[in-house]
Amino acid sequence: MGQEMSHRASGFAAAFLPLRRWRKGGLRAALLGTVLLTATACANGDNGANDPLEPMNRAVYKVNQAVDYVLLRPLAYAYRDGLPDPIQERIGNTLRNLASPVVLANDLMQGEWDRAWSTFMRFLINSTWGLAGLHDIAAPMGFKRHDEDFGQTLAVAGVDEGPYIVLPLLGPSNARDAVGRAVDWAMDPVRILAAAKNWDEFQWTRTGLTVVDARASLIDPINEIERSSLDTYVALRSMYRQRRAAEISNQPGGYGSGVDGSDFDFQDPPKTQ
Amino acid sequence: MMRWIRWIAPVFVVLVSVMTALHSSSASAADLEKARALVAEVAEEGVREVVGANVPQAEKIARFRTLFDRYFDMPSISRFVLGRSWKDADAAQQARFVDQFRELNVYTWARRFKDYNGQKLAVTGVQADGDSGAYVDTVVEQTEGQKPLSVRWRLRMREDGWRVVDLIVEGVSMAITYRSEYSAALSDPSVTVNRLNDLIGLQIQQMKAQQPS
Image 1 (cartoon, rainbow over the protein chains, first blue to last red):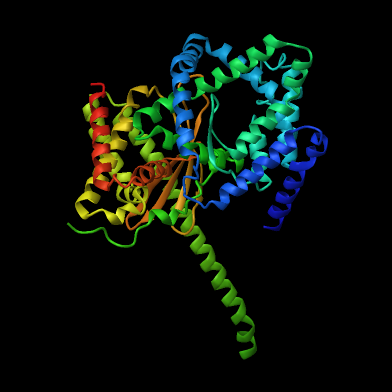
Image 2 (image 1 turned 120 degrees about the vertical axis):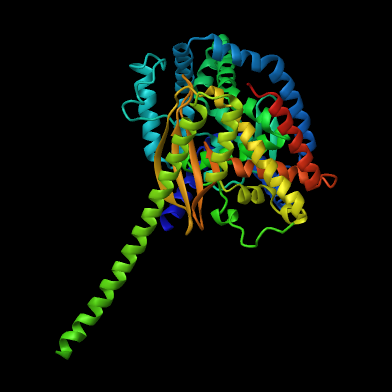
């Protein structure tokens, strides 16, 4: 227990270390703004769904669905079914390798030294012997891939998720994770380098492929939700929240869902006819 | 003689308590082993009798329903997903909900039968969940090119053995997702459990119509 607390505290301290460098920029203001927004949202009381902006979110969700239907979904299908698997795998590897500096930064900010070491070694090995990330040869060496982002770092530091937000084009999120996305984008050294060198094609290609690759991996789950759900908006909201909680726990497969097992036990007999 | 008893008595007490502790922990280890065995059994039977069997889809569905009823505690899951509204419903509505919720699940899974292509399910671990619960962790192979899914089975001990109450796929609980959906639907004052039953009935009809033969 004590160890967990100190771990939490060091994660908290680490999460705010880089702020010293951002004093001149607007990021700190944005971060503080959202922390405050989160705090106010919490003060409004817990309604279970934690979705005070639901009417607006539903409107954005509708637009997103339309864009998805005409553009993203067809591209995702073409990518998944049109490209040979080895090519998809290499694209995925390269994208993840490019994203790993941000993962590393978040590992470090959370005080996850083992995971940070793993990410560091992955980046080193895959960028060189893995031919600029085309091949994930670090995984068979024991450096397994994991994801980490600033939304999770904030969560480890004790920041509440805040109200649910559907972001235009990006989809399900919440106040905390929306800030996390912005921070991850801002601190991404690959993006900063490419911007400095004016590698516009590189930037567009990377962003486009990242979106299509992510959507392609979600084809089956999203189809499933659309077919079996009474209200896909609510189903996605619930799933997003659960998924994030599992990711924050750093053991997606072993997450216990946050509900007590005895909630499935019912003592009183069912009503008789 | 008396001195000897005085010395041996505390040792005996410690010994007995240690043995009791060992016995109770080994009993729960045996239970966990049963939980693991049950999940392996569901998977094996599901492949042999349902998805891998060379029978028409209607027969697969019937077999799957039997399997589902035997290993899953549908009445408890139904009550869980309906939440507080369970108590608002009368006995007939409750019974209809339990029945329809099971059919919804049966037909949701039935659509995936045709995707089966020899994928394996491996049990990777088992752990206790409170006094009368267990988690059985499994990894399910997917169709080529996609990374395997981690599926955690949540079990509760019932009078006649373990029953599955939830599947947590990559951190997402099916029971909690259904509960969120139904509580959101029921938060609309015009939606009663009766109306919800009608809506689920429509869903089932649609799924039945889309069933491959």
